[in-house]
Length: 226
Image 1: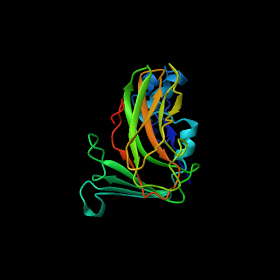
Image 2: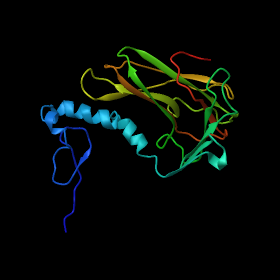
Image 3: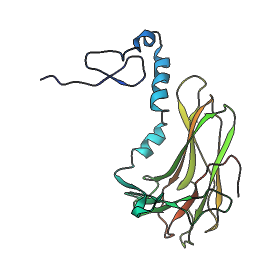
């Protein structure tokens, strides 16, 4: 009995080749000329950017989840339930002058600093290699006698390329905190890419307060919109 082991095309594109082959048809004519670094870049073009080690750790803790689109037979409604939080598309609790929807995040007791929920992720293409600022608006829905999340319990991060030629990434994080409930707060993050490339932005929540939920304006801004 022959057990086939999946092998990837040696040009670096990341695609699986047929059993017994080394290249996808047409790829070997140029793939052999590429250095290992160039092959890595070709692979990333197909598979997306690398994640920083810290992001890999956080994202590996997602666990099982349930997602529902057009939830409860409502067109456009979106619902996701994770082991540590619920995430819903919200069209009533939105920021005036902001997006037409927000993201409602309702954490449970499993949502802690070591096991945060990734509440939202955006990707921006071709970001210039110069200092950048991006941010989101977030609010805590109800008053909470235990206070507000700290900047290591609720934050925005930007994952960007930090080397002019290599495919390495770094992460910058926001330092803002909520100080007034039911009021939108600006969460900016500043970073400087080393090359023109894509940047990924994520909002993380790692705490369960008695307040019912947090709301994220469903829009990324390059200046304070509040």
